[in-house]
Image 1 (cartoon, rainbow, N blue to C red):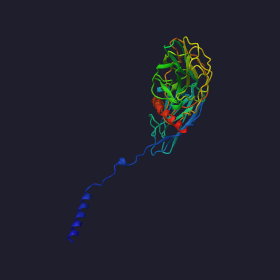
Image 2: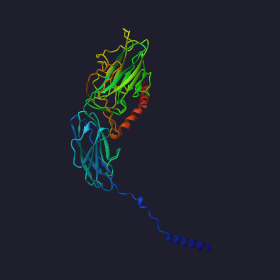
Image 3: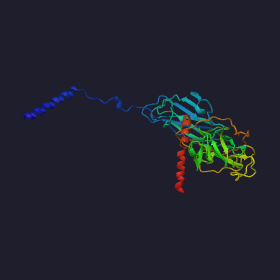
Image 4: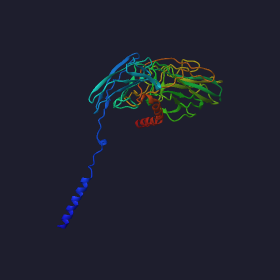
Length: 411
């Protein structure tokens, strides 16, 4: 009985202590706060011709639990596109890499479950080809930062146009044992500009070193070509190279000239090496269907030699002097469309003003023009394209190994 009384007394004491302590309340921070959650509809993917106007609308819907008090709507266009007019409430500017931008205050409150519709209008310029459009806001309606969400998207467009890759070679007269510099040039004759970060479609120039000579100095922009693509950093002594603009961009009339210093062997005969405009993987891009100017030669005439040397057979040429351009086209391959609906975007290149290659003996290049077809661009934010191009280029070795391994499995 005494034990029972002691237990009861303990229970009463505990109850008294509990009554003296305030009840613990869950912090307000743990409660779910109401917030807007905006999402935007998708623009249709069309292929406007140069001069066409793209005029569509998008709908912004609030799927959240609180109203969006204001909506800042942004549109960015790559350099082959432009706005048709300047709308009221919008601020227009040109930002990095020739990207045109409009930032608009829609001036409306979007309640939970409600929607607002806004137009997206732009035109395709004469040099339009591989284009991208970024459009939208943020989930709260504030001004967008970089990166994509349900409220901010990216559309890639391929204009119904073309770009013409052109190869230019060079010619030099030397004596056995001489060292000579010759130039190989890649140029875009338009009408469309080229911006492609998709690995298989990066515009490139494949250069064969003329047999009987050795490359003793090579441009840093040129990688040894092995089997089906670039295979390491620039280094002398290789039989073939592939060169490309490091930002994966070629504006209309932009050219890139690559100088190779060659040591002519004592036993060399007249010789030449092929220069071919295509992609870094030697695949003809779909946007280039005029193949008559895709191939040229580095021609080395060795004094005292009246017989054809190695590398001079296989195909006639129509040009004389430097950059003699062949009438035959380069082969085509299976290249991807290069389109995506999200990810990362376009970058600009600096034009060299359409220069042609010149050798140390003063000769100049000779090329012809052309046109047709189209392809797409990748998907990085428009102002982050340079970094994306560098990353894509840095991954070429891995891709080349992957492609070769895939080929080995199927052989």
